[in-house]
Image (tube, rainbow, N blue to C red; front, side):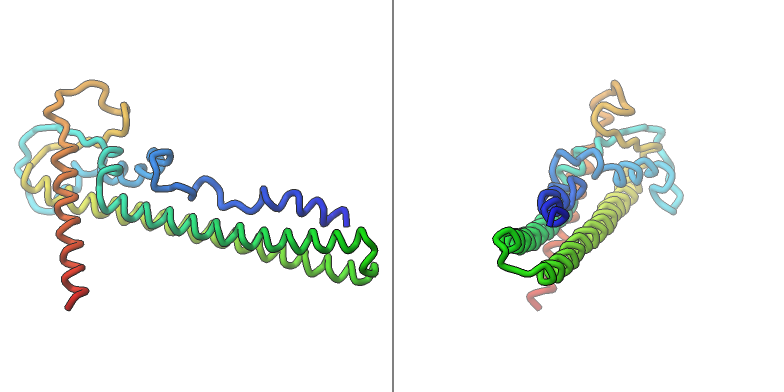
Length: 219
């Protein structure tokens, strides 16, 4: 019975999916969520297009954190991921509370002498199996969400890079540097900051894609 008491005390602390996933679309995780996109944008100068480009010798930069916070596709995908995380956490919490009620009911009966020692052993064994099942559910959901987060960031990075290739085919910049916060570029001519222009193009293209999908859905 003491063992089950300790499990009840630790259960609430154990049943959490962790801060890796909760609020993954918010500014608190912006630094982590922009890593994939930043790495992809960093390679823009070497993979801008497979066609021959007469580069203009100009080096420009993009504030990738601003792109991530303002890009419609990124916001929609990260919001969807955060919603999945919230739903999974709520389901996990509900399972944990149900198990806690069963544990407390068992302890109350055991303390009042309402069950035999053999009945107590059977109940404890059943409760321990249920607790392990809840822990397994938590671990499975954490893995699923981690994989979905990775796929989401890959989708955002790929969408940004595809547009950057088309964008630079016209602009012909010799190098596009991605920056995050105050990193990399300490001081620069503001005219070299193409963030707003790039972000506008990304969102214009995303809106066209959404319109196309809506039109296809109504046919």
